[in-house]
Structures are given as C-alpha cells and as structure tokens.
Amino acid sequence: MSDLAPRSLFAPPSILSRQEAQEVAQRVLRNSPAPETRVSINSAARADTRFALNQVTTSGENQDTQVTITAYDGNRAASVNTNRLDEASLAAAAKQAYEIAKLVPPNPERMPELGGQEYPPMRERQMSLPTPEERAAAAKIVTELARKNELIATGFIECRAGASALANSKGLFAYDATSSVTMTSTVRSPDGTGSGWACTDGNSFADLDPQTLAVTAVQKAKDSRSPVAIEPGRYTTILEPTAVGNLVQLIAGAMQARAADEGRSFFTKPGGGNKIGLKVVDDRVTLLTDPADSPSLNGGYDEDGLALEKVVWIENGVVKNLNYDRYWAQKQGKQPTRAGGGGFRGAGRSLRMMGGTSSVADMVKSTERGVLVTRFWYIRPVDARTILYTGLTRDGTFLVENGKVTRPIKNFRFNESPIFFLNNLDAMGPSIRINASENLGAGGAVYMPAIKVRDFTFSSLSDAV
Image (cartoon, rainbow, N blue to C red; front, side, top):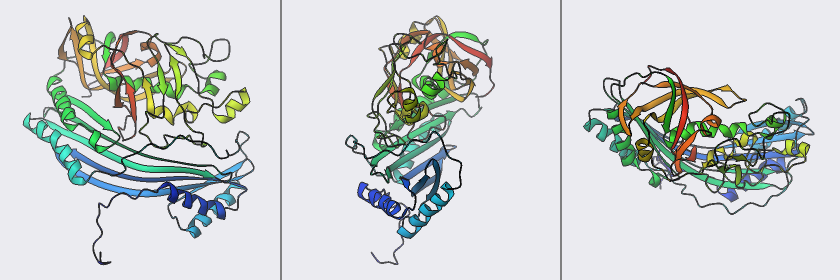
C-alpha cells in the first residue's frame, strides 16, 4: 500500500501480544532507578454504537495501551501513567515515579512484591471487534420492531477486546487477554407511560441475540403502558435474573475479612470475630466466584499478581470464606484469598449464584398476589452493617394476581438487603449469564437465577417510568 493511501478508521484492533507486553515491561524495568518497580500494562480496543429515536446516533472506536509504573522506595510508593512506549519515554516515567516515591509518606501496610508465579494456561479469546455495519445491523433489528409496534427504541452496543500484563523487578510476569460484548435497549411508548428493557451479553459479538432482546423489550413496553398505583408495602416478589444480580452482587463488596474482623461489616460475629461457618441465608443459596466463568479484564490474576482460583463464599447458606488480602492474611495468620482485591472486586464480575429448576412462569402461577420486577436502578447504600440498599424498580413492573400477570404498576422505591430476601426464598430458576452493572458496560457479567421471595420491602411509590 502506498504511504499516501488513506488509513482506515476501522482498522483491526492492535492488542499487545504476550511477547510485546513482556518487551514493554522489560524496557521499564531495565531503566528504572528504584530498588523495586512494578509495571501494569493495559492494551485495549473498544467499539460502540448508540441508537435513539429508532435510529443510530453515534458509532465510534478507540484503542490505546496504558502503562502504569509504580516505583518503591522502602515502604514509600508512587505511580506514573503513560501511553508512550518508546524506551526513552518509559525510562523518564520510571524516573519520575521514583522521584515522587521518595517524597510521599511511608505505607506501614505495604507488602513486598511477589516473585514469579505459576498461572493456568490463558484462555482463547476472540480478539476482533465487529464492524460499524455489523453493529448497525444489530441495532436495526430492535429499531425496526419498535417502529413496527409504534414504539421508540434507544440502546447501546459496547464491544471490548484487550490484554493486560503485570511485571515487577522480582521476576513476576503475568499476561491475560479478554473480550466481552453487551447490547442493551430500552423501548418506550410515545405517550411516555410504558417502558421495556432487555440486555444480551457475551464474550464475542456472535454471542449476542438482538432478536430475542428486541422481542422482550418491545413486549414489556407494550405490556407496561398506563400503569396503576398500588400501595407500597411488603409483597411476595418475583425478581427476574437481572434484578437478582442488581442486589445479590452487592454482597461481594461486603465480604472483606478485615472489615468483618474489625467489627465494621455484616459479616462481623456478635461478640467478636467473623461469621465464617455460620448460616446467614437460605439453605439453597450458594455463591461462588470462578475465573473460568469470567469474561472480564484481569480474569487470571489479581492486582498483586496472585493467580485467581475458584472460591466458594457462601455454600448452602453458610459463610465458607471471607476475602483476606495479603496484608490482613499475614496479620491474622491466614492464607490470602486468591479472588481479587478487597471485597473480591476483581473476581466479583464472575460472581455466580447457583440456581434451581423453577421458571418465572411457574413462579407467577404459584403467586396469589405479588409483584414482578424486571430490574432495579439507581441503587445506593443505606447501612453497611446489614448490606441495606435503596433504589427504584424500572422498565417493567407488574402486579401478579391469582397466578397471572394482571396489569402494569407504577414503579417503587425499595429498601432491602440481599441478606434479608435470601432468607425469604420461595423458588429459584436456572442461573443464566446477565449484565447487572448500573452502567451496563461490557465486562460486567454475572450468573444469576430468577427468584421468588416473601416480604420484599417497597417503601414508596415513584413517578419515574
């Protein structure tokens, strides 16, 4: 190709290979003046398409490689971030990190860098991104069905591919490559009274099912028009898998062993210590994280370079593990938990709640009077000691009477703890992959079942649609 030929705006993503990442890390390490140095590399490409008012409105792609250099001077540490990968630029960044590190206060809880680690074989990933035409075609499936039904569709398709690497001056090197895609749509009635939502999620663009997404969101929008108000209170409630994931994944952030041991957590045992070995929810509840499930970035190792492993957090209702970071594990005479950082935030993206055999239809049939919830929105913490949160139902809330969905109802504000409603479990469906993050970005998948619970607390009505 001639040098004068125009460059394509949609060239294939350039993701650092293992060898390329290792070469970048070595450029940093051989030029760093610090006694100890850590190098974190994130090489990523992203493509997205947004649609609104039944037409595509934006389409974009970007890619970048970011290198974070952390220099240590004893217990003092400082980091500098750059995306200039030539040797001189990386050496300058490493020098700057060290100069800053010598000025900052020491961290008495700093743990020494790890040496070389053993990692499981990296999984094969589909690293290509779909073209703008492919993304537009997926969006069109939703917008055409919405237009045909005299509804209005909005939505977002986000696709990510990337690789991450971690290296240090003690010989550690870790590398992992990942990809994930998500497509979400909200379909509304022109009078603004009806709203339906659906999401499809996967590791590659071929995993998406825009046709099922379109049918689900359109049908919910039609069914939810002109909702009626019912009294707030405690209702038997059927939560679709996304609604379950919205709340159950909040348990992950509460499972830090240090917070429990220091008396700052739901997992603090009355009288001292923590609740490992104690039953906290229904016998049918098992929660685990497994890197084999994860479609997410940094799926193979944690922020210090420890290889992640499968961890069962709650088994048959009993707390089996809390998350010990390296500092707290050493202080308490425990082994660090290989599930990510505090809370288990790294592996939280692969949280799985084991499922049952009931379908949502079966749950509706067995309900004399209750509420069916599609998903929750604007979820915010109220009380860390009970994992109590508040938020709103959204995009399809329905009344169930005498075994049937009878009418749409206005949205509620809820005040609930996943610990409370997992103690009031009536029925549970198969666990499926969903995206339950509030921003619904690619990479936030968890595996959750639909469930039916007793006495779910809806505290007030909301006029939001």
